[in-house]
Image (cartoon, rainbow, N blue to C red):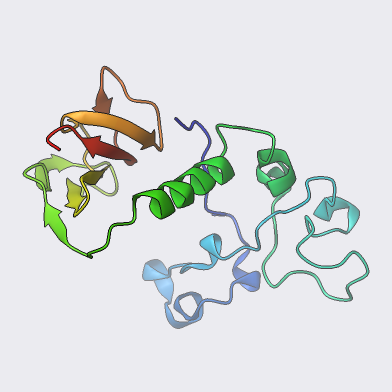
Length: 184
């Protein structure tokens, strides 16, 4: 189970934005676009931009800074720090990639589970309706992602990996679980 997350950089100065949305929208409908999720990843926590570094993204002697500014709090999520944390996002991705290789079936069949669909509840993101994406693969494992506001029951089976801790066996909002289904 994982407890850490990686956040979008929301406070990029307008002058530093590169996404066309930022330059093509005006007035009260002006939007920053997708640059907040395009900030270069932090690799080395000690290579702090405050000291002229780029968290290991660019060589220390580089003439130019990264294309988008990196906030100081990125050091907490640098790869060298996450390497030592078994609950980090880096560990989650590695575990998920390992499971993907292990569970890969021969066929590419996918079947939607009964759990899949809209929940009828707002998910908290601007009041939009949430839902659940739930499917099984040909060799018996399933993936459930909960975008709804309320926790959801998981199908019967052995939980292999979750992106956040389960609460009373239920999957929280904005979380995923990989399960080996009991029916096989």
